[in-house]
Image 1 (cartoon, rainbow, N blue to C red):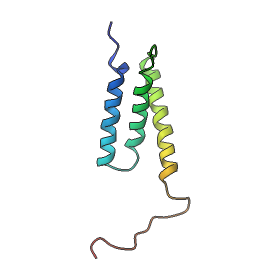
Image 2 (cartoon, rainbow, N blue to C red):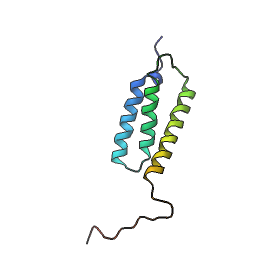
Image 3 (cartoon, rainbow, N blue to C red):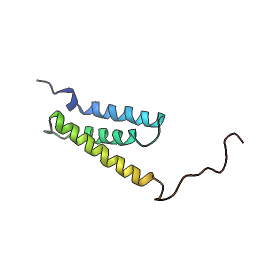
Image 4 (tube, rainbow, N blue to C red):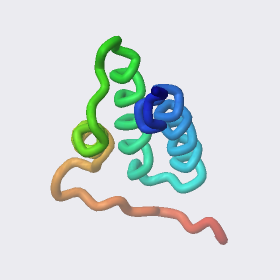
Length: 92
């Protein structure tokens, strides 16, 4: 019997690539967290003998995505209390 499609490692890596491209088109570090979560999930599926059920796999993906999003937010956010200001206008 063939494995279900959600256990296909390259499918998760293809989804990570698609989410990474979407992050380039629509920047904001939102899709990048999901891309990192999908990539790590795909790499975890390369481990022989690891065949979690769909709910467990979604839990792994969502947890990894949340952790990566929190790390990205901490790394790339402005220091607390600061506001981004612009001193020039593109039309001047």
